[in-house]
Image (cartoon, rainbow, N blue to C red; front, side, top):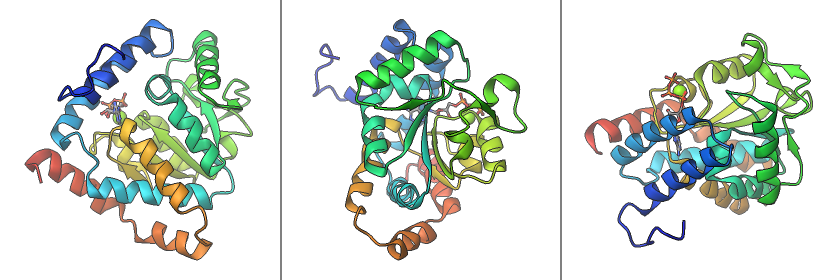
Length: 245
Ligand code: ATP
Ligand code: MG
């Protein structure tokens, strides 16, 4: 990270790529995660590499949902852990949520490496290692979750989530917040709150909104949740990508 000059016009994109490469080297990110990053980078380029206004609305609605939740859980995969480990730990702290590691390509080694990486970045309690419950209607490996984590959660934040898993979580009746740069991907399509933004910008912004709303009463938080329209947000993101406005 030291090698990339901050005034480089594509600084953020280079930084992102570099973190994913390091994640692969350190056994945190699967090689497939590198391909996912490439797809994300292309969409981000077309979005102008900025948080569009409807994404900011979604990030504010996400903060309100997390603050209203009885049991919010933030899901962590290999890309999330490589890109925003400290930012996820901070958000968990601010909204009083659990962090749970959940991998598409699950191995005990990667689970432990990621949990340790999160702890090094300030996470106190990391779930996902018990894997004592299953998400219904999903194949065995990807269905593994913690009974007192994602399984019991009422609100889940699932960044860069695979479509099948996003659908299965939605099927469990959870309030689902998805971060995904491709508005046409199934995960944002099934989300209650689709955030079409780079996770690098999205997480700190959700945290800022949550801090600002920390003293808001339940009525105000409900208003923010109700005012958010998922269809409008998805359409605005697609419009920006296709037409540049
Ligand atoms: P499918 O249609 O099967 O869902 P996919 O291209 O969506 O295929 P996935 O592996 O399910 O592949 O999802 C990865 C998603 O994460 C992609 O939509 C990609 O655009 C998005 N993505 C990658 N990097 C980032 C990032 N830094 N921030 C936000 N989204 C990202
Ligand atoms: Mg997808």
